[in-house]
Amino acid sequence: MSQGRTWDRLGWAIGALAIVGLLMTPTIATAQTVATAQTAAPAAGPNTGAVSVQWTNTIVTQYIFRGVQLENNGLIYQPDLLLNFALYEGDGLLQSLDAYIEIWNSLHSENTGWANSNQPWFETRYIVGVSGGLPEGFTLDTFMVFYTSPNGAFNAITELDIKLAYDDTDLMAGAGLPALAPYFLVAIELEEPADGENTYFELGIAPSATIIESETAPVTLTIPVTLGLAGDRYYYDGCETFGFVRVGLDFSMPVTCIPAEYGAWDASAGVALVFANDDIEVAGQDDIEVLGQFALTMSY
Image (cartoon, rainbow, N blue to C red; front, top):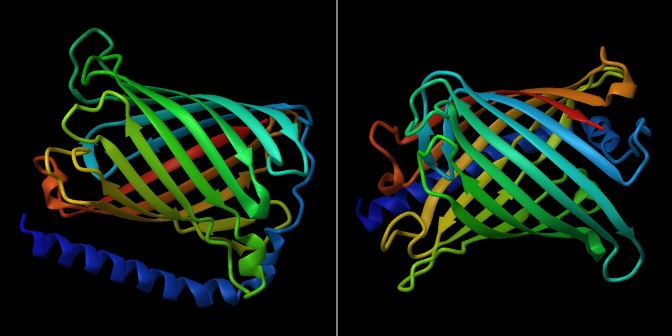
């Protein structure tokens, strides 16, 4: 694909994102009572200790990883288990410190590179990290990601990730707007070749607002927007900077029929559009891919 065409598509994608943002702003501004509800302190749950757990069960219509389509047929089930340890809270430069471990999986009913008896088990990620709360609403995460394929579809990869996030709730509330929750991620593959870099960069926002008010079952709309950028060798030798843009619409609500002593449950459903660089698309992948997902999450 030519350089001009790549930047034309990137400009078109960024323009589309700007239009989405402009369309979203009046919608959320008219629901200001909704947006202010997000700043209220959450109700105390049954777990008041320093150890918390989150279990998410997600079904997606296709699996696209950083702009590359890996599977778009059959049933794709992606369970995720996160265990968090709150280690410290204070008032200095380091205002909080958490450690966490996470196991994420992707299981496919179709043959996604099956090479051994673990046929449906396409991917498992083991994640170990620490998260530090900093002044002015910043959070710095540093974590290791170990990508493995139980069914032998790909070789194991070890990655060091650093993520800086900013809680702009108070800043945006002063302007009568929802928080954007911006973040910046750098992912470095530790098995990088000697003649290049295997580095990936990501920018994202996730503005949200409650669009249906209810004491028991409010509905929240979130619009996550992700821009993926590549280092020199992340996708292939000499690849261009632009990787993909992903724009989503996610609706979520609490599941109140489950007693609180069994944790806080939430259900969500959404759709996303993925605009990828032609040069990273696999055979059969369209310029614009549409994917849907449904998730049920328990937090305790």
